[in-house]
Structure formats: C-alpha cells, structure tokens
Image 1 (tube, one colour):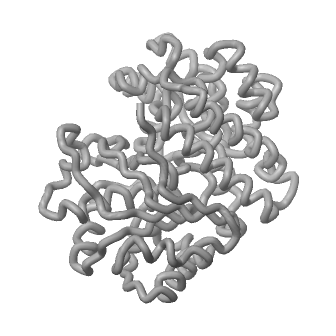
Image 2 (cartoon, helix red, strand yellow):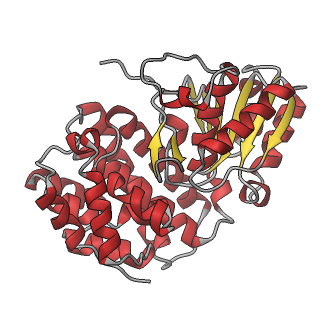
Length: 363
C-alpha cells in the first residue's frame, strides 16, 4: 500500500514568515480559508497575509468557516475562489478550516461540477494546491488527506471520499498561546483519540504505530498543562501541536475507528464539540482491546488504568450526554460497516453498548 504525506512539513517558531517562499511557490493568487475570529486573535491570519505580501502574491480571505464545516460553506467558498482567480488555497485554523480548504481546493479545480463530486467514489478529481497552517492541537489535518464535512441532507458528518494532502504544512505552536484552555483541552483529547484509534486499528502498521508512540510520549509530557496544574508554556504548546501532527500522520495510514464514529451523532445532534465527543469513548474502546496493546498505550500516555484515563478526560473535556443520545450514536454507527471494520475486535451491538455504558458524563 502506498502512503502519501505532505511534500513539506515545517515545525518551528515563526515558520509562516520564515518559509514565505515555500508558500508562494504554490501559485500566484491564494484563497485564504479560515474561521470568523480565532485566526485574527492569535496572529496566524496576519502572518499568512504578511508572508504572501512579502512575496507579491495576491490573496482573498474567506472567513466564514464554521465549526464542523458544511458542504454549503465549501460551495460558497468555491464560488469566491473561482471569481477571484485563486490557484491555491491556504487553510488557517483548527481542523474545520483545514478540512474545508481541502474540499474547496477540489471544487475550485472542478468549478463546473456539482457538490456531489465530493462524495463520488467513482470520480478521481484533481485539486489546486493546499497549504495548511494549524492553530489548534487536535485534528492533525495538516498531514492527512481527510476532509470531514457536515452533511445537513444526511444529518451527520462524513468524509469527502477524495484524499487531498496539503502540499505544505506550517506548524507554529505560538498560535496556541492565546487559546482558551477549553479549546486546547478539547483538541488535545481529539489528538489522543487519533493515536489510540490508529494503534488499535485493523489497518495498523509498524509505521502508523511509530507515529502514535512518538505522539503519545509528547502528549503525556503535557498533561499537567492540560489539567491546569501549570500555565501553558511555549515549549508545551509546541509539543502539543507536534503531538497532534504525529497523531495526524498515524491516522493518515489507518483512519479513525469506533470512537470517532460514535462521536458524529453527539456532535451533529447534541452540539457537543468534536474533541470532547471523541474523548468520551476512548476509555471504553481501549478497555476492550488486546491486553498488551492496552497496557502499552496506557503506559505511554501516563495512566495506570482505563478508568484513570476516563477520569482525566472527563475532568479536562467534560461532556453532558443522556442515555438516549448515546444509544442513538451506537445504532447509527451500526450502519457504518466501514468504520466498524476498522476495529480489530468484534465491534457488534454488544461491544458498542459496552463502550457507551462506561462513559463518564460531567459538566
């Protein structure tokens, strides 16, 4: 099997400005894709603008990406990108802008195609180049080909079927420094989920597990910052972002598994943030795994049991979800045979109800 990673990944302080030439090499007119406010507050949007201006690159800013971006948003941005003549896309922000940027890059390249192209497994569309500037420590979208989009027509989230890896990823931990601790915790829990779900996965390989191992060690070294015991430092921010990138590299090989599948219903129907929803099911998913694998992950992450893992996640990323919503999540996932097949043990109704039965809800 062939695996694809971004052509260039830079992880250093001020890397957007330092590597402006690499960014400019992608084209002559950029569509900057971001959310409404966070990239303006943390300085990332200004850095991207400055880097493009220094290289004489024209750009247009699309700052309407919502949390869990919808297909409708992708199509709106596509129209703006086409009208301004964009020949590459720069995603700036958390997983939502980065995922949206990938889908937008496909639709700009195929401007005459309908939205259904995003989910047409029989098509093989090209895309214009993509640059990714992550500002949260969760999705690892800067190093994956995955773009998860909200399908209002199906009342759920689903992945674009086409893999679009960023051509360049510019990773700078300084953008985390002003983020609310809740955002950092929720996104860090998502990164932890990527590492657990890629390790406990039918498609796991020595390569994917190498990425997960390295990411888990970095993640564990930052636990006291996630719990609020210590104030976030620049080094810890850089380590958390790096852990997220390693988690992204791991799921680029394997994809995610049962906890992510369960989370989609909680996010769409319950309005629960993605990372928090994913974290709710990690302990139960790990508890049913092979004993040696379970012990290995717990040891690297710094926990002595799945119960202590569950308590830590509940403390830093609390969730309120009633039994009816949890059961609906399980029943919805039972229809997703591809996601169930990613689990290396039998993920039947009994297993899913076992997982949701052990969750710790708080808030």
